[in-house]
Structures are given as structure tokens and as C-alpha cells.
Length: 637
Image (tube, one colour):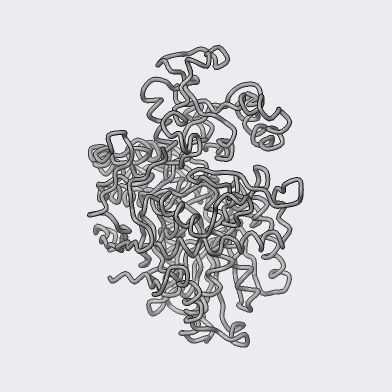
């Protein structure tokens, strides 16, 4: 296979404009002849569905939830980046581009990242027009705050509920098109497989989660906007329903997977508090604007924080990285928290936490000002921990949060299967080896509102508008295969629950392929994962039937895919012997224990092609070429 990223020529700042002009168009009268399926209705999926329908295409949108308003995008707290430079502090499109490339440790395509920075400003205008209630300064100007990996304030926010407010904006645009009859909204459907006809994506097979019915849907193109795969680790900040199934089954139909081992560990999450915990809770990165991260200077110090004098506190991020302080990128903050805990300086009952302290900010600005900024986050923290951050420091620890890896896409966001487009967190394209805070919402809305409407037309203009028919043999065969897999799962009748086996997988992945990785641990994981997978297929218990609402069956299908996908993650981590961004190979560190890249051998995207059940995936490289920035050792000191 030859990977062609289809990056247009010309100067970096002109590539996107040139590409739009060079792209083929579908005239308005013909758009109504084309059907498009969008799987997922979070920020990327809802914005894409609304935009494509507004253009005149016929859209079918699918989601797991009872409403798109429940998509996991709603959980995003801190904000969305854009290069508006409202603060007049030196920001620009190029600076946002550079910060994003550098934050990703120079493991992303220049052209894609620059386009993201370009359209970021359009996103803010679009969302303000929709009525998204961004925070404003006293004079009415939109407010900004700082996020990690940047020395300018470019993050727009709606208190600690930015994802929710942006999703409501996209949802309103989507439902307008539902009302007009241009979008058919199919909720409580789970995509089970992709249908390929003559080498092109032509539809999907879904399961009605309420009735168990297997359904087939045809289209001229399929758009996946199904989010990330952080739940492979069992414990993550992702919604319980977040999964890899749609992307993984597309991979098994020919869509290559890129950089699957690139997983972001978020530094500010509520620590694990018990062995039967089912998920973790994010505390927004925005808290690091005013909160100071510290641990006791003396290992094993168990005194309450109020009893530890200032001279005996180690503000380790401020001391180690004076230029960025507590606002270093997430991978750097997470590794340093782990390092402090490994040194015996961790706090709390598990000793796997560090303090995030607001006392100085409260004394400086007043309690009312700090509560106005972060009150809903403080309330969430208190509800979970019974501790009030206004009176005592938060305890935080890193947790799996976001995945930079995903299905490989070219500049048009099309996968290696013609007609299959992938948006948002489900693709690999913009964040390299580490995503900067407040850039996930930016990418999802950029892909949906401002990129896919142009690039999908370039593809549709080259194919026939003749309606597709679900009576084709490919639909029947794919539906039969999906039904057979469900029957196989229900027939096992074992002793272990799905969650027990998933938790076992998660522990292996966290220990071997989490914040720090090494050859020995990854090799052991490769031995353990097939054994866990075998036990699943021999000893899992799934109550109920397939002809009803059956959440155990839903989870079983997703965990079955995680058990296969986890092996690819480990293989990818083994193959990349350098450290970069989130991917810290212990064998490749600087003298100061920072990630040490190997540009001579690993300045590429690692791309994996499925070669069959009993065969190893085939490895491909997409070389990364830097013409506008010079890759260097990241420094945030």
C-alpha cells in the first residue's frame, strides 16, 4: 500500500485556499441526489451533519445515546483555542500552529495543523452567532484564559462547561436540519460494521439498542466521528459508552490505523479511590491558571496540607519549568506527577496524588473571584470527594483522557478506504504525540463545520449519484456476520462478567503501556493480552438475549474489540523505540528525564494495515516533512 497524504503544494499559508479552489464541486441541484451517513453526534458528528445538510446533501446521523446532547463532547470543561489575539499578547495563526506542532513533539503533519489554526477563528465566530455563551470581559469583549503549552491567552470558555455549550450550539444546528427533513436522526443505534462495495464505503450495519434489531443503511459516503479509545484502559475520564468498535471494525475492512500507542494522560483528574471504581473524573486544565501544584519536600510526609509549612513544600513544576510553571503541556505535567509519587512524595491514602492548591489565588484575588471562575468544578470535586477546594487543596493524579492515535486520513480527512471519512478524535491527524489543552474542541468543530463540507464534495463529484441499495449481497453478508458474532457472544455462558475481564485488560495496559513504557513491560503485555482474550471468549457471562435492551451485550462487543485493539497499541509502542510526547520509552530519555526523540529514525506516522485474523498487521510509514518549523528538543523551562 502507498500512503498518499494528498497535501497540496505551495506556501503553507496558501495550501488550504489553493486546495479548496482546486477541489471538484457538486452543484446544488446534484447535492440532493447524494446520501451521506454520519456515525457519531458529538461536536465533530453534529457539526458535520448540520453543515452537510445545510449544503443540500441527504444525511443520516447515528448515535449511541438517546440524544446527541449526551455525546461525550459534553464533558469537555476548560475551553477552545483560537488565534484571535483579543488579548493583544502576541498571538497569531502561525503561533497557534507552532505551539500545536511543538506540543505534539513534532509528530504531526504541518499542513493539517496549520489549517486547523487557520479555521480556529471561524469557529469562534460561528459559535457566537449560534448563541454559545462564552465568558466575556466587563466591556463585552470575549474573554480568554491560558492553557498548557502556550505563553499567550487564547482559550475561549464558558465557565467550566465549554463542551456542553458548544455541543448545544452544534445540536441546535443539527436539529434545525432534522426539522427541515435533511437529516434523519437515528439514536440508540450502534454501528457494528462497515459495508464495502467495489472497494468503496457504501454503508453500515447497526444494531437497534432498544429492540436488538440488525439494520442496514446505504449511502454514497460514510463519515465516522466516533471519538477515542481511552476506555481500552478500563479506567479513564471517557464516558462509559466511549469505545473503539466503529473504528476497529473499519480497520478490519481496510482502513489503516495510525499511531495507536499515542494516548494522552491528563494530569488533573480525581485519583482512583477503590478497586471497584468504574471511571475517573476530569478536573479542568484551566484550574492550573490559579492552582499551584505541590508535594511535601520530604518523602513519606503524611501531615495534612495545612500543617506543612511553605518552606517544606515542593512546587516542582514552578521550580523545574520557570517559564511555563504549572502550565506546561499535559504529558510533561503528568510524568512529573508520577515521578514525585515514585519518589515517595505522593499524598492521600493511596500516596498516588499531588496537591492543587488555590490558597494563594484566593488570598490574592478574593474568594468570590476564584469561585466565579471555577465554582462548578469545585462543586463537582466536593460532591465526589467531600472536600472543599476553597478550604483545602485538591488532590489530583494523571488519568487516561484522550487519544491522539486514530484511523489514518489524508488531507481530505479520507481514510485508506475510498468514501470513508474520519473526523475529530477518531482520526489521527492534528495533535501528533501530545494534544495541547483546549484543542480537542477546536479540531472537532474545524473538521465538522469547515473542512469536511469541502473535501467530501471533492470525492462525491467523482462518483455516480445513482442510489445505493441495501439489497446488495455485501449488505446481507455483513449483517449476517454481525448477527453471528452476537450469537457467539451470547452462547459462551461463562463465569466472569465483562467488567471483570475489561478491568484485567486495563491493569495490563496501564502498567505496560501507560505513562512510561519499556521493552520488557511491553513484551510481557503481548504475552498477557492474548491470554485475557482467550479467557473472554471461553468464560465471559452475558445475561439476557440479543432481542432486547442488553447493556451487558453492548459492553461485551466493545470489550471484545478492545481485547484485539490493545495488542495493536502495544505492538505500535514496541516499534517506536524513541520517546516523543505522551510516548515515553524509558530507554530513550534525556539526562533530565524528558522525552528524547529520535528524528533520524522515527520522524514518521506509524500506520498499520490489517492482514487477517491470524496474521500480524503490516507496518507502513508516512514520512513527516518539516519545511516551516525546525524540530528541536522541547523545552518549557
